[in-house]
Image 1 (spheres, rainbow, N blue to C red):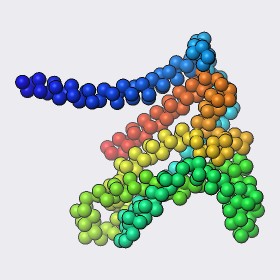
Image 2 (cartoon, helix red, strand yellow; image 1 turned 60 degrees about the horizontal axis):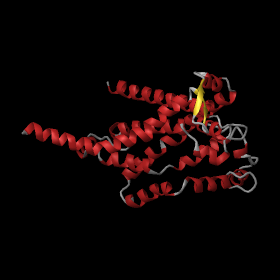
Image 3 (spheres, helix red, strand yellow; image 1 turned 90 degrees about the vertical axis):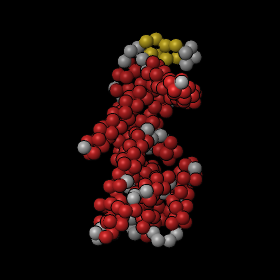
Image 4 (cartoon, rainbow, N blue to C red; image 1 turned 135 degrees about the vertical axis):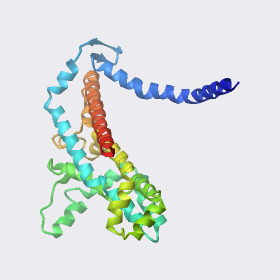
Length: 291
């Protein structure tokens, strides 16, 4: 009787999970498998068939300078994103946890950037970076600096695209703040009695206790930066002269401008493999640190 009851419970569980599993396989893993298949053929969307060409699509993209420039831009964006924006929400969350008053008000202020659509945010910053009447050039003129072209300058465009992120805020702040709030009170009290306050408390108590959520956010940040598409495209459409073309924009252009689905799928598969490799290395590094 007990065995039948356990089997019935297990069946109910699988029935509940069956629909999400089917949709995950259909909407997540089937497109990946389909992309791998398309990358190996000279695909025609009209006939939904194509001649098998093996690794030709992969060798074609590997021989393009534009493709490697896109990879270079992608990793530069990754470096800028991590160094300039990743630590801002952590600092904001720690500052928020140390406040004695107005915590709810500041939490609301931090979450507001999420409510602003990306398109609106880009429009505002494009106006700030405008070379003729933008706020940025008006500010640097005060210090005697010559006006810059900003988004039209290949040397400055990546910096201009990443700078809006230094404002911080968003869901990341609340995640870090929640993790800080969940640090056991007895640990904080013991640290306080031992004289571990101020910066010592932050570096020896707060950060070690939220290290896991920092690691998870770091993995997400790296994966997001590797797949960056919308923001650089809205700011500069990959220009000037390809200076802001990421792998995401390269793949988008191959699909929508060249209409070469086999080549675009090959670039997508390579991007996926690089993202998996970086994530695996990060996970391995975290396990090593714990040991």
